[in-house]
Length: 125
View 1: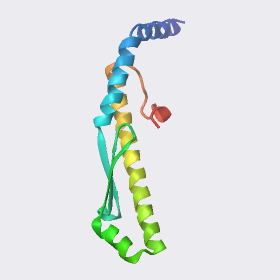
View 2: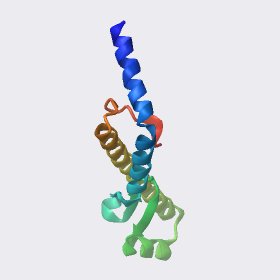
View 3: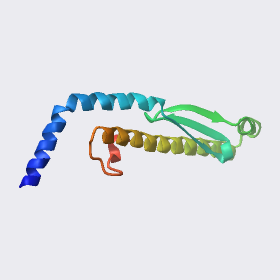
View 4: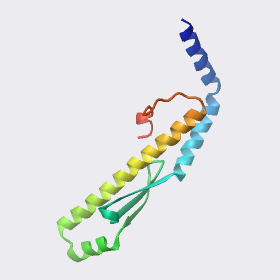
């Protein structure tokens, strides 16, 4: 019985702090735009940078890969290049998602919000 009352008191405290919590989460969301991660495929042939807001901010393709595509122009070469780009983009977005989850979990811990490891699940994906 007392556990239920303790939980309700905690909930009431969080409701009182809701404007502060909302403001802090908006601040974190904005800061995620400054968090960047890199991923590469093909031994560096394709490098992608993404931010914590799960946006791709740059794609760099090695000149040798580009020259090979122009010179050869075969469907297999094009498919390989596309696969490298897709792989690098997906890897960068996964790293960005993980970085965003860490930032949000840290902010939640600062505010005393209990979030279990992996508890953010689908919040940012």
